[in-house]
Length: 215
Image (cartoon, rainbow, N blue to C red):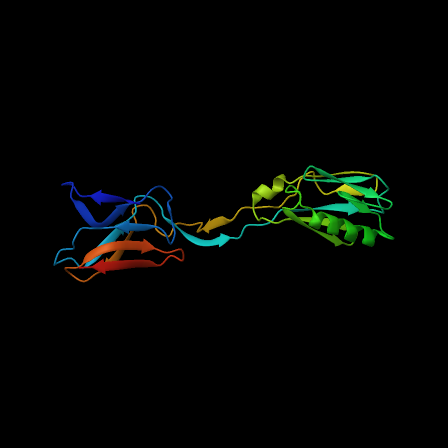
C-alpha cells in the first residue's frame, strides 16, 4: 500500500500518498485515507513522487508444443521417448508401451496418438497427442513456461523431433502502458463534499480513478 505523505509539521496530508518507483496500479491497488477533510476543502490530491504506469491488459498463458516428424514409416523396434518414457514400434502384437505399425503412415500416427493418449503414466498423461499429416503433435495440457521442460527423443532414421523439449510455453503476463499516465510529481485532483471523509482512492486496471467517501 502507498505510504501516507506528511506535511512540514508531520501531519498527514489528506489524500496525498507517496508511490513506489514505477509502481503498477491495478484493480487491487488502493490507498486508504482516514483523515477527515476540513469544511473549506473541496479537493483531495493523489500525488506521485515517481512515474505511475497503469495496467492495460493481461496476455493469456500459452501451452508448450512440439512435433515428431515422420518422413516415412518407422521400422520395427524404432522408438520415441515421450518425457522420459519409451514407446516402441512393432510389426504386430503390440502391448503396453508399444505401437503396431499400420498399413500406412497415417494409420501408424493415429495408432501412436491413441496409445499415448491412453497412457496412465503421469509423465506422459500431462500432454495431448494428435496425428497430423506426417507428424505427431504433442501439446502440453497446462499453459505456461513449465511445459517447455517436457522432453522428446527418438531412435530411427525416418523420424525427427522439432526439439529436445517442447517450446513456446509462456506464463500469463501483465501489460502496462509504455509511457507513464502520471509523471514524477504528478497529481490527481478530486472534488469531494466538504465534511466527508475520503476512505479509499483506487485506480482500476483500465486507468479509472474512483473515490469512496464516508462520513
